[in-house]
Image 1 (cartoon, helix red, strand yellow):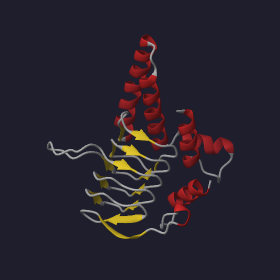
Image 2: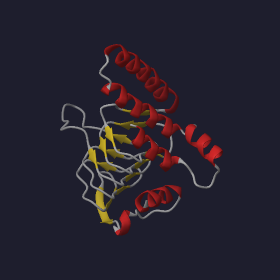
Image 3: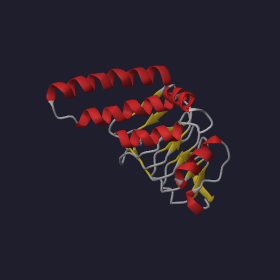
Length: 197
């Protein structure tokens, strides 16, 4: 739990501030708080001492409800999420799937299974995947993939691809030198740092 959380912290913390400002920014970041609660819930599920386990699970359920109501971020405790997970913004985020290391999601992202009795399980997402704002992911996603804003991924996406559209189609190869994804801005810098570290 703590190793993964430390990597999550490094992804959120900015190098442009001193230790105090960096820590304060990170501990007030909605996405990071949601990740902390998720990782705590995973930890609580592994505790085998009955009384302690029940207390930790109750604390987790209260914390999860607060995060969902205040920030609009729901991360299912049965999901498996690798280290270095980053949530760029808050609001309308639902995650129920398996994500590799170094993944990032924007606001309005849904990762889950098909409804109406057609589900074949929740999605599996590889390492270093960026999922743009408003995207919906039902299919499986490979490593080093960029999923564009508002894309709807219902089919599998291979490694090193860019998936855009409704339904999402793989449009072009993502350069795989060092696993860097082709977009600009703070998220790209965080991913670039993650890949190079």
